[in-house]
Image 1 (cartoon, rainbow over the protein chains, first blue to last red):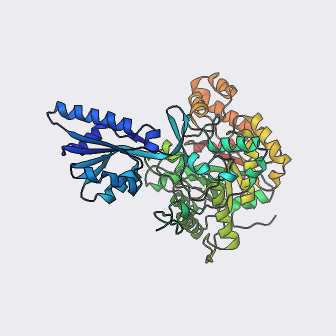
Image 2: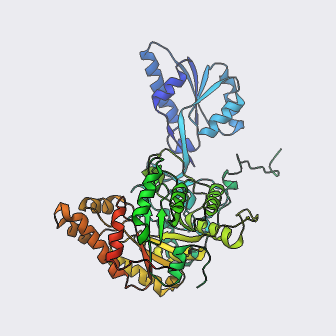
Length: 222
Length: 309
């Protein structure tokens, strides 16, 4: 999923302070799972903002709505009846959601309330970690299901650098060396010979090197 | 053994001599005298001088420019290039730039992570990794072509090296990793600083068991300790470094004013021991900001005078 974290409240306040009527929009997908921008967080942020502006003698009107998916025009359309009542939109979705709103409601300013972080998975309760960089040419089939592009700090494709200590990355003990994990996994699978296959220079075009990416499925297009 | 370049280092190694290299870290400024001075301190005692490429990710004078200063003094440089800061366009371009000055050696590295340096906010590149960089230089030299397939007018004639760290984790991947670097075309290897001689010998035995020492020249990396403080720093703070407690205890066991000399002694003794090990083709002496000690180390290790080839 796409992970996100709420922005510092002071930054959000700076964005919306010129406005009085705010449409605060959550998303039921990834940001709900990572507890950054779902219905619950929309409610909490609305209370925090209310309180802040009340202390300053300003009665903020906040319309709270949580959409099924903010990155989907079909659901973003549901905001249409609420738009006229808002001076500004505050989105708690990832950057995809913010941009979908911005492109649909061109006359309204939209602010992000979260920082979109990475494509990751839950490691344990309350901990998410990066797992994929969307390189567009998945090599997990030859690296034992562990991605060196996303999980090696240097995106090294042919093995660990010389900085690994106690199985951890040189950048710090909280990061596992991806190549140590790959090696251990290949050994478990009895496939450590695979390690010596040389990975040639990667074609980064599908990774974004060729510019912003798009998927066009003619079989699904109307 | 066929010599492919004008590299003195290549000729020395292929003639069967133990090679000796050292290194020069370029300054954090534009004064060329610092590089020249370091070079002049060591030039008579080594076959070639490595010039580091923004080591520990601290911004410095470019490796290529510093190499040119050495080359113009008649000192043979080993251009170190890391893949951290440049994509394949810039790497190939700098390889040609180096070749235009007839810089005959290159060491291909991934480079320390930028978070260690003075531009931690910067983005790293790593378009290629160190093995792919080895492949790239060999392709440019041997095929006379760019990665993109076009012909190179006057292809670079460069003796190509890579690094190996026998001490980083996981230990058992370190020999296969060396094999991979050799398969990519690494003609010489300079290792991480060796303090744990037993572990190095264990690694080297595995290297020899696979016959890898016959496919590349392995130069053992040596860095003399200046003090017990440096030894502790290396042990605890430098990623991938293995400093046994015996080294620290030995330095701690002498007066502070004698620790530097003790460090030199440890280094010389290590070289003398490793000279006898099968698979060791030479020594890469990295006396960090202590270049003036290189002649003493080389002479006392019985590696002087350097052969004329």
